[in-house]
Amino acid sequence: MRIELVRRGERSAAMAYLSPLLALLLTLIGGALIVVVWRVVAADLSSPDSGGLAGALGKGCSDYGKFLYVFFIEPLTAMWSLEDLVAKATPIILVAIGLSLCYLSNTWNIGAEGQIAVGAIAGSFLPIFFPEAQGPFILPAMLILGMLGGMAYAAIPALLKIRFGTNEILTSLMLVYVAQLFLDWLARGPWRNPAGHNFPDSRPFDGDQLLPTLFGTNIRISILFVLVAAFAAWFLMRWTRTGFQIRVLGQAPRAGAFAGFSQNKMVLLTFLISGALAGLAGISEVAGPIGQLRTTVSPGYGFTAIIVAFLGRLNPIGAIFAGFLLALSYLGGEGAQIALGMSDQTTRVFQGMLLFFVLACDSFIFYRLQIVRRPVTQTQAVAS
Image 1 (cartoon, rainbow, N blue to C red):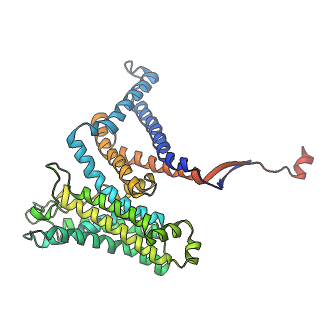
Image 2: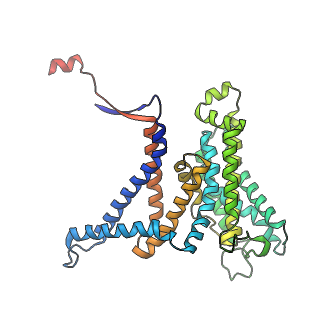
Image 3: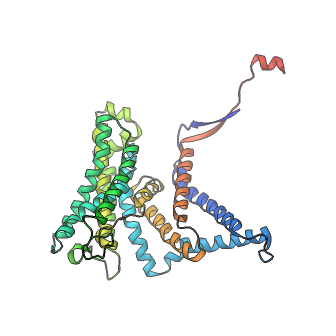
């Protein structure tokens, strides 16, 4: 007897929408087990005041209730937390929108983290080499350079796939480390602020080189880039021939080939779009919350955006809601470190579990489990 995955004849539309919620529920259950086990392992069960195993389990359950509050509720209770939430969600959603288009076309860009770094480098060229440059054109020029930098870096795995048939997953992922090391070298070396007392940062940006804020808050206008990008991607997929080609080539490549659609052109196009949005996210971070070029621009937004893209059902509008949820995990993880003394990798663990459960639940949208029993052979029948 064995268990097989059998493709369903028709997928459930309701399950397609319930899958992210089920994945989130399973993540919460998995998180409860982690916190409880962590408390039991950390407890001194031999101490007379510990209450033994029962006391440790009770403490773990109590800590998990506090963890849920710190992780999901507390960041929403203060204005400064909401501003931080928007600041963290903005680059994640921008990148996720571009990745959604890639994945819909069955093209796998895993290197958005590197494209963020290159976008930040390219967009920082003007304020670093022309520190006195001000005026209404300096910021648009920085944003355009950031987008072009991300596009150029994303074009490398796309062209390698088109020309040599290389796996874009591997090439785009490996290029992440190249970009990060190059950024680190620039920030510590030739682009380091000469008046910065040897800190690995560039000169701080100021004036028109920074993204303005909205309504007297700390929320940058980069949130408007998110809304524009989401609407543009939705319009592209819903109303244009290019969007139709993306869907057809992603779901039925052979049918697309018979219709005359070019897979190579679509690989390049989707990589360029996702690279441009990742580059825009990178320069928006540098010209926004960070205010200068540093050795690290993103704490992993490019990889988190992969989870956001799937959690949002590869839909630009869905990516907005999923992006805020994942941004909440960054703030909640920081709060858990302070309130409960948990590891700074807690956020990554929860994000990883969420991605795993999303993919697992999605698998059951298209497949079902079937138990296959081995037929009884003549030899086995005689032996019995």
